[in-house]
Image (cartoon, rainbow, N blue to C red; front, side):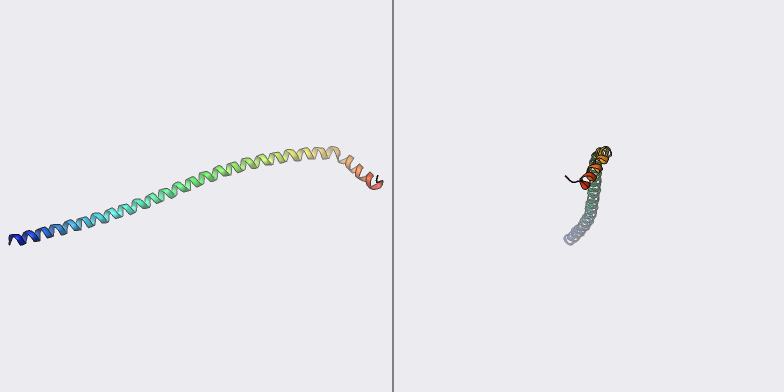
Length: 103
C-alpha cells in the first residue's frame, strides 16, 4: 500500500508541476507578446520620427533652393526691366521707322 500511496503522491506532485509549468508558460507567452508589441510600437515611433526628420531636412533644402532660384530670377528680371526702361523708346522708334519706311 505504501507503494500505491507513493505512486499517487508522485503523480499528484507531477500534475502540480505540470500545472505550474503551464501557468509559467502562459505568463511567459503573455510577456513575450507584450514585449513584441512594445518593440513594434517603439520601432514604429522611431520610424515615424526618422521620417519626420528627413521630411523636415528635405523641405528645408527645397525651400533654400527655391529661395536661391527666386532670387536669381528676380535679379535677371531687374536687369531686363532696367534694359527695357533704358531702351524701349529707342526700340519703339526703330520699329515705327521700319514699318513706315522699310529698308
